[in-house]
Image 1 (cartoon, rainbow, N blue to C red):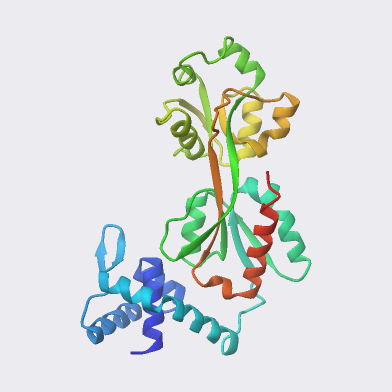
Image 2: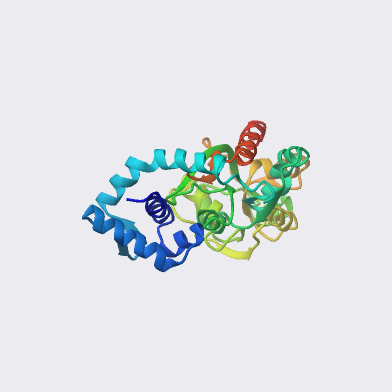
Amino acid sequence: MQLSWLQTFMAVYHTGSFTKAARQLGVSQPTVTQQIRTMEVEIGHLLFERSTKGTVPTPRGTILAQDIRESMSELNAAIDRHFAPTDTDRPLRLGTTAELASTRVIPPLASLVSTGIDVRVLTGISHDLLSRLGEGFLDVVISTTRPRRRGIEATPLCDEELVLVASPQLTAEVFPDGLGDDPEQRLAKTTLIAYAETLPLVRQYWRHVFDSDPDVHVGAVIPDLRGILAAVAAGAGIAVLPRCLCSTALATGELVTLLEPEEPPINTLYLAVRNGALQDYRLSQVHTELLRCAQQWT
């Protein structure tokens, strides 16, 4: 049994794919396949099975991964420290949404960049960013959804309250008497401005407040919450936004809340990295600074 085989096994286990594991390890897919098959012959049991969800570990494979995970992580970190030092010339790659990058992430990163840590920020939708993290193209992701991918560890970063907002003009025109006793039905007659076609924040708000999925016409999809805020303030429709993002607009009367639930919906942000990645001292610094600064985010 060779160390490289175990490293290959853990790469397949974490990524759920022979192809992604090969890309992560910098080898060919046939090499990964041969090493896994050789391991299975040595052990006498299958370690992975193909399914519609990708490459899934067998019970034997899961037990092996659990037995060696911590030891392999420590061993790989020791190898990196003493035999293959981390390439400090390569910038750390951070993924997050566009509005989080500009309103929250840049200030804590600025202090680290000034100390010599190079960072590259990639913006996009959390689902896509988490996929790129799992494939090794990103080092850390601030996600607006809870990561559920194998091989990724996530730390809760902060909670943000979700509010349903509209412009005062639209509210006066469409809801002159408020939302009444059946707010869900009244809201179905208006236009929604959404972040994505899957309605992530909207669906979360509706399920929490109305215990149902939203049935509202989507007038526009804007993958930037700041753009949604501007569209709603201009009277384009209603939207679900984090209160922290629109607190100024609410305070000045540019926007108004349509409902005030007794228990407002809460969305949790997560700080995600690949298992064992925090052995990289620079990444550990970024991770710690983001967690520290997030305590002040409201």
